Length: 128
Image (tube, rainbow, N blue to C red; front, side):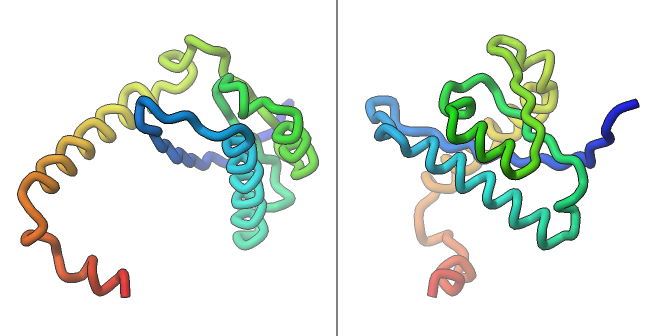
């Protein structure tokens, strides 16, 4: 017998320029806010009392003490995927998400190279 977890996925991939470094503590601060975000969503949709698991890779800031403490205090179980096992433990990341991001990036570059005059007016209206 074990716990049944409702499936949910979230992936917020942001890349820094190659020559830039993230200031110390920023990733940890973002991780803590990310946990608050999950708590908020689960409270709003009425699933706060259901079992929940956060699955992270072994990036050191995902496993920092304050992050693990916040995960535990929030009632989440934590699963860590060891380094080098992404292709085995995260098949969607390899087979679907990566090709999708690659194609999206290609389309974005094509769109940007085509010039601003083709920019939909709806985007500017949304910024007002």
